[in-house]
Amino acid sequence: MAYITLDRRKLRHNYEYLNRLFDENGIRWSVVSKLLCGHPLFLEELRKLGVTRICDSRMGNVKAIKKIAPDIETMCIRPPALRAIPDIIRYVDISFNTEYATLEKLSAEASRQGKVHKVIIMIELGELREGVLRDDVLPIYEKTLTLPHIKIVGVGTNLSCLSGILPDYDKLNQLCLYRDLLHAKFGQDIPYVSGGTSVTIPLLTDKVVPAGINHFRIGETLFFGNDLYHDSLLPDMEHDVLKLHAEIIELEEKPLIPEGRLGTNLEGDTPEFDRNDRGKTSVRAILDIGLLDVEHTHIFPDDNAISCCGACSDMLVVDLGENLGQYKTGDTIAFSMDYMGAVRLMNSRYIRKRIIE
Image (cartoon, rainbow, N blue to C red; front, top):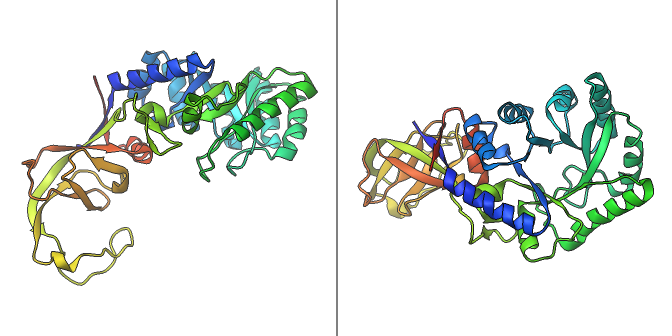
């Protein structure tokens, strides 16, 4: 059966690298654990690293975190669904919010549970995902201060995830200026200015992040060591903390061109083939993963001689060329992956999860 591995040593290396970077810049940071899909085996590795703050967006994942490490500070970084509010108050230490109606209901539920719930107000700075529009920030902030069981502990913003709008000094400085304005007008401390995510790390190393930004939310770069701003890799980090291993369940030399009348495949596509390949053959392997687990465009064979031909629901076909690697049925083929590939694989109950040193 196919499985995904997490390399404990490489994860620690990346975590310690980021910890030093943020310590040197006086910044707090939280690990974004969405990628792990609440899997307890991998969450336990975060606990062993000494992680004290974790962000997630799914209540099932947050519950899994609190079960493993009740003292870890949890942040829900997706605005709460109304039906999830009782669990938000019960399991989430800080939630990110944009809607006053939701904040009212959070306060009412916090009262029923005998708690004061902490929130960060997200501000829209051009990405057009979640965020209070600029003209509404002061009115919503002022009304929220009247809610007896809500405590505002920060402001934040999201960039790059939906529309691809990159962070820069001007946008991040706008967030700092909102913090200053709100503090001056209402006299409230605002400990969190959460403007940094993985895409912002290169700005930090280039010393162009405003001093007021004091909190980062980091997921992808922790696991992949990538520079999302420049679409490249960070040279001092490990890039393959996660690996997919899929087993060969069939291996045969087959024609490069299928035979018969051509229609659409499982995904609704009509494949195209090079007529010059007619009469040619190559060694093909079928692996024990498929579209139920991951799209093949998000995984990349470690062996550069291997290419992906296509996939159906539960099988992936790869071309081994002349099979110079001497693969045979029962062997496994290793793949690296991008973020979306890892999310899909972690979310598949058909893919086993393993820790390696």
